[in-house]
Length: 422
Image 1 (cartoon, rainbow, N blue to C red):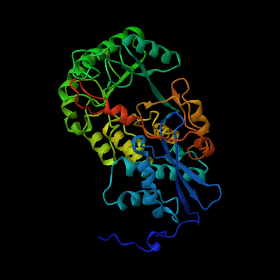
Image 2: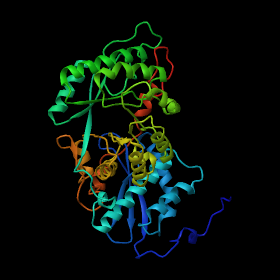
Image 3: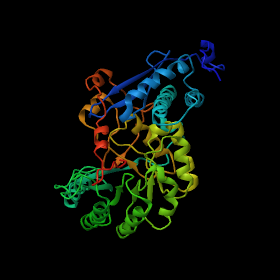
Image 4: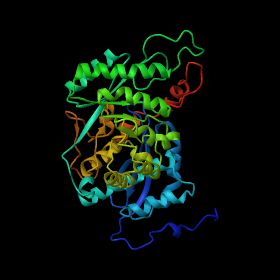
């Protein structure tokens, strides 16, 4: 193996293409219309006006993704954009040390942009390139939150009134570190870290929250919850058993990825469905989750596992193994990632539910054509490609800074001050 430079001919089109359209540039556009850095990949071609857009958003380390795209640009310029499989394999293997969120987000952004180009050239939405619809639209869940169970219940009522039939419920607790909700008032006065996160309080409050939700919402609304990887296997078992009477639709990320090998023993003792995969940073990691038979819903972030090309393979594997998909798609996924997820949702028999996010007005300005949730549904665009565009002038009005996640993560500590993985 050598690191010596190779002649440009090495990266030339390796076989005859069916026409002379070629990739001319790969650009990164970073924008933050909601204060969350979003990385968009734009692949330009020699066909005037033909370009593709994809999501490469690794919010916490977005600058590293932009730098990575500079490395892979020479591999792509001059190549035929229809060879998606070869180009994405080239990006993946050329780094030698592969996988991880930086490289895979860069790869994913290019992959999605190439699918966008393919749809535009064919004059078809991407979901038709995947085989067409097996359902009309994707049912969505949104997040209800509050400092206590009553506040979360009030928010859940608002979402139900807006047409949501799947609602993820989160409630606060004392201090810093709880996930998905504002903090409850008060501190642990006795603690070395009065603002710490305490697992015993979490294990008590969460079943109380579900009891309140069922009392208010009855059985017509499916309830979901995100543990955010905070529990040991024994603690996860205790929580799931306490939640069984309330029939959750799924409980997400009960274990950190370092302990995913323990998922089968957790799944074996409870009937509560498990959703896992947000922290999978490669196709192979996500595929192993599906094949454990301990996961009921695959929650992978499409930009972390290799883009649409990888995610469609995962959807096929999930269908074979009896697992459903529930692609990760919060505010740190751009509207192109949402479009890719929904294209899979409506074309795959493995679909379970789709995470949703209500974008602000500035996001609609930056991303014309983006999908909106209507009465609890996301429906794909019938326009060629994703049907979503990028207004670069508008994007420039919302420059990205460093992610605020680092500061939050540094504060996620126990009552004795020890750092807790968020």
